[in-house]
Length: 111
Image (cartoon, rainbow, N blue to C red; front, side, top):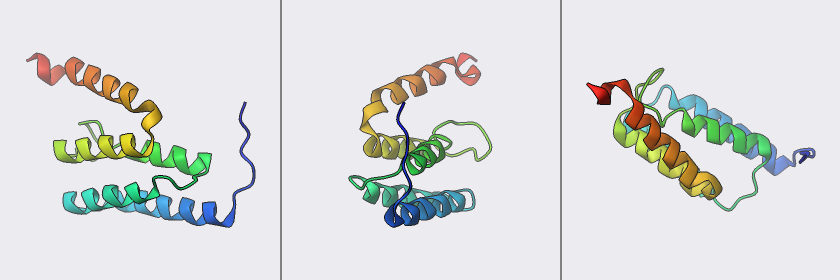
């Protein structure tokens, strides 16, 4: 089991910035959301704490499904999935497979 040690000052600042950016996503326009997702790509290669990684993955994955609470358009959903794939490549194929399976099983596609 991997234990997380105390956060460094750099990790605390990055965690706070990620938290605030994720809060802004619920109030932003679609164009602003795409810009925020693009800015998240600047975190690639930086050491992130496990807490920040978990917040970022969960925040991005909320935007990848077609239902509520935000009802994001397809371009936003695709941008969120691509951003998550760029930042965390170790699970990219699994996330895409799950996304496509749920798209096939969505009741709207059966009508």
